[in-house]
Structures are given as C-alpha cells and as structure tokens.
View 1 (tube, one colour):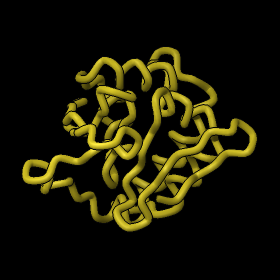
View 2 (cartoon, one colour; view 1 turned 30 degrees about the vertical axis):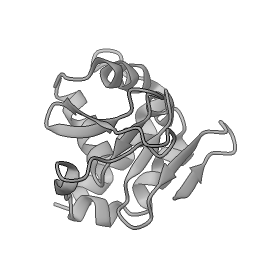
View 3 (spheres, one colour; view 1 turned 90 degrees about the vertical axis):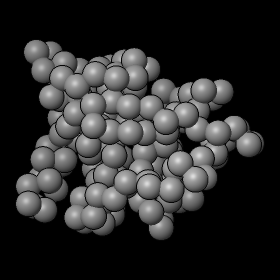
View 4 (cartoon, helix red, strand yellow; view 1 turned 120 degrees about the horizontal axis):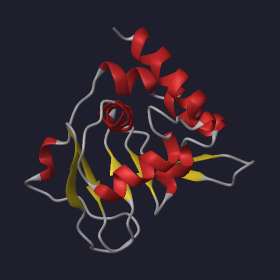
Length: 151
C-alpha cells in the first residue's frame, strides 16, 4: 500500500498502487473532502486508470476481501446507490475499488440512498445540494474536470 498524506491536516489515506483501490480508516471518508491538496492528489494520481477503466471487483463472491486493519476480519459488502463498497464492521474502515470514490460522490449528489454510515460521512464532508461544504469545492471541481476529460 502506498500512502497519500496531507501535511496540513495530518490525514493519511492508503492506496493500492496496482488496483487504485483506496482504504479509508474510520471517519476518514468525511475528512478527505476537507483536504483540497489530498483529494486533488488522489484524483490526479491514477485518475486516468480509475476513470477510463471503471472495473468492479468481480472476485468478491469467491474470496471475500479481508480488512487490512483487523486481522482475518471479512469486509461486509454494502451499497450506496449503484456503488458497492466494502465495509469493516469491526473498525468501520471503508475499501473503495477503482473509480468507486468518484461513483460514490456522484451517487450521493444524485440523492441515492444506502449505507447510513457512508451517507452520514458524505453529508458531513460534501454538505448537501442546498448547503454545500465550501471546503469540498476543490474536490468537486477536480472530479468534474477529470470526468469531463474522459468522456
């Protein structure tokens, strides 16, 4: 795993350099949107691979993914809109496969529903359509730029 670090906020997000998956420790999903430097960097590094090839984890049924923090703890498949993500019931960490962060934000902005823990973190990080979080503007702008560049 490689780490994306923000020196200002001390936030650290783990990423797999092979599959571009992202691991968010407990409550980190809400914090990523408040770190313009880190959120832009995550989108920029590997954006073309994540957005041009949005593959889903099809091996999930045969070999359940285990938590990278809790030894031998299987991750629970959870849903938010069209996005299936992996969630640890023990440490509350979230694994997002390639392009799932972008899809998760898109689903949230469309008003999709699902896992309340994830929805609450997105609401706190992004705000609502009526009351957007100004700190998340950098992330949303970068996401729109990269999405527009791949279509």
